[in-house]
Amino acid sequence: MTQRRRTGTAAGGLAAALTALALLAGGCSGSTGGVRGTPGSAGVRDPYFPKLGNGGYDVGHYALDLAYDPGTGRLTGTAEITARATQDLSAFNLDLAGLTVEGATVDGAPAAANRAGNELTLRPHEEIAEGAEFRTVVTYAGVPERVTDADGSEEGWLRTADGAVAVGEPTGSMTWFPGNHHPSDKAAYDITLTVPAGLEALSNGVRTARRTEPDGRVTTVWHEPEPMASYLATVAIGRYETKAASTPDPAVPVLTAAERSVAARSAALRDEVPQIIGRQVRRFGPYPFSAAGATVTADSTLDYALETQTRPVFPAASFDRTTLVHELAHQWFGNSVTPATWRDLWLNEGFATYAEWLYTEEYEHVPARTHFQRAFAQEANWAFPPAAPPSAENLFDPPVYQRGAMVLYKLRETVGNATFDEILRGWPAKYRHANATTADFTAYAESVAGRNLDSLWDVWLFGDERPATS
Image (spheres, one colour):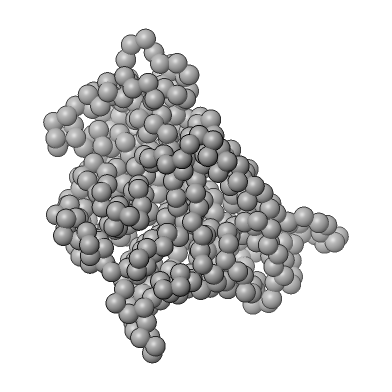
């Protein structure tokens, strides 16, 4: 994600944070009635969003079948969730904000459903044994909500003049489908979108089908086979112009799209997507997904870009080469290697920011040292250590991005270019399609470097004070 612009006051941000935590506080309570299984936990105790996500199961696949009416803003959906129990389950939770649940089944049998805030608790007709795979189907409808984050930015299902754009970092995906909405539980996705004739409907992965329904609406099916955190799922509905291409060898299909009002001014840079990915492959290793692309929206829809998996979303005003490099680098750093908790977000943003520095160093003759010195001089970058934002309100603050990139610059300076390049390629290879922590990264870097790097981490990653010199 590009660094967000604050739109609210500090007091407003605190109120939003408290509201968000209150909404996330619901859960399943009550006795288990003497049965062997117990309810899965409501929340995975993330440092910033303790009620986000759910315990007791691991999702393997989401099949979402959605129909949207831009005129009314109404979304109707069926979510089929295939998961495996990690304990004996008498009940389990899904995260869902707003929307009305019309029914739920588990393995074909009706399941009791209870709502409390953003928690949907399902009690299956029969217990689910640890290790068993089970299939949950939830039907739901309503007008999806926007989420105002602690920093004042908006996410979730964002309604537009003729459609919608869905972005979900960090919690917004629960506004349009029920699920285990924490980045630690990644899954494959099939997303089916039905919209009025004349509109395009875009999502993650590869488009596998497009058909016209008897009533004239158009249905498009998207397949994302690689594991994806729910915050990286996206939908874009509207009057879009699309263009297909492919990356250099090895070929990966590339589909870019832009709303018609901004299609012409974004066309030249959209054409560069395959070339930029090819350059990043040479630095970061094999591209981790079976599709690539970009979606450019009208300026009124978003005020930040987001690295939604395989097809990052950009407001036209932020669709520049630097931002494009940043969001495409996230496909390796953040999307394939995904943070285990939101505290590890610098592993996304620090790497993507450093990818900007590497790109300008190699192709625009601006040394990474120049970016480092500029970042070092900025007081805002020293507000807190990049690996320890003080609250959810600070997740997208400058230290996570700029000081995160400074950590990587100092690592390169300390271990040398050859070893650093080995780390840069080896890290996304070792944790491909997995989750990782800050401790995982520091241990990996030290294993490649063959030495202890505590003095580097203590100052640049965890230190509270700016060093006297850079």
